Image (spheres, helix red, strand yellow):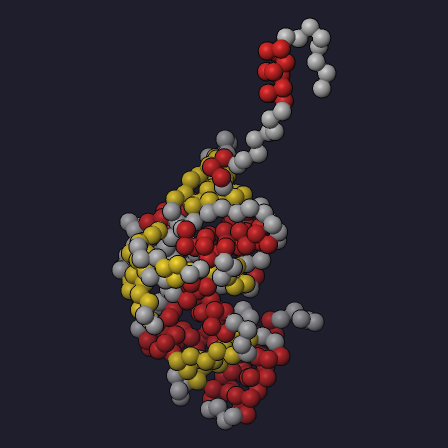
Length: 322
């Protein structure tokens, strides 16, 4: 660097001090910017197992779930419990964090994203009402409190915590007052789960599922079927795992309708009315082989017929060559 000959020593020291410092590249607040467009959808395995999210909007009941020594109590906020559609924010943030970590980027529990990106990725509209609903979602996630002893990454939480620790609308557009950027602080236990890669990949069609119960059934199938060709479960256990507050008779009706529709991504459902059982077959050769073996094993004829109808419906919806 050139220094003028007549420059004083003090001036030279000030000049060097100013230029030898690298630019401050730290992000304000130490947040992670969600900016990966092609991130695959991820969900954490703990919330896939336990019904933390309500299936009905405006649900203000205290819900308690106990199974295999674990107890989960969901306490609603002033505007009701966070719903499984509100969980889209979790899935969006988890997906971004996992993909960034896979690319070697530093991640933090504080995630910053644009409202527009979130709305489009989660298959929502971008009208003014959609931005208002996003604000409502943030309020429900912050207000809902979970009391649990779930273990994640070798640690057990024995306290209550919100589904998000805090949220902030960072910027607003000057012309229409819509939120532009949002920051959310994820719970520490959820961030530990992400760091430990205790996540599963979801189908891109997940955000197309409209009914809350269909979404919950999909994530249960994804969690329990995993890499196996099939997962068979009694209707009573599935009812408990789903967190549905509907009567068992209504739940049975809804499950039969979902099985017959063939609309569940990645899986084909078979409902066995005689044994009150549901079987999920994974797409692919192993799942198809398990399906054929079950048919040859003498499953009830009515169940086989319903199963075949669902398969035909699903096959018709697949694009040619798929």
